[in-house]
Image (cartoon, rainbow, N blue to C red; front, side, top):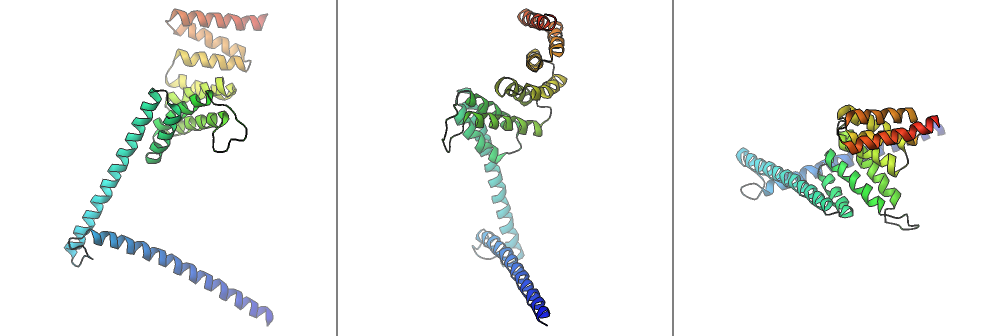
Length: 249
């Protein structure tokens, strides 16, 4: 009997909790509806609750127009933050540009160009930053490099054929973060989309850094055939010869 009584008590408690939860959810929904009703009523012709169908339609139309205007204003604000970020970058104020970009992304989080700009700005700030110990609230050099990486990766995830972040991330991995092996797939993708001599040079350097010498030589030979710039052709030939000397002594 005691066990049965405990089971009944337990079921009663569970039922009570469920009832309270349903009641709370109902209260929340009613509160939201009441708030919306008050907002619509404030826009009705008589500044009170709409009493006729026509008054209700008029109030709803006014409310929808207010929403549309708010959306339009928010979109324009996002554009202004983006323009400001561009201007700050042009002036070399990359730290301030990051702050503007954070605001712009808040308005348009799926704009791949904004995330690419974060990658650029954070990467440049990182180069002039120091890893101070025990500096809460301040991003360190490594933090900025990570922010740059994340910016490029997000831009690429939004647009897989966006060459600028593909190249930017590869340069970051090769020359700043010491991760040339990870740069290679992005460089190859870049070249598939748009063959470019600078990208080829970074790819050759990445192969060289991981001691894939034959692959590096092949890329330099490709540059010699591809470019019409005599300086770049000479540089590629010189680098190719250095690697051949390493391979064959």
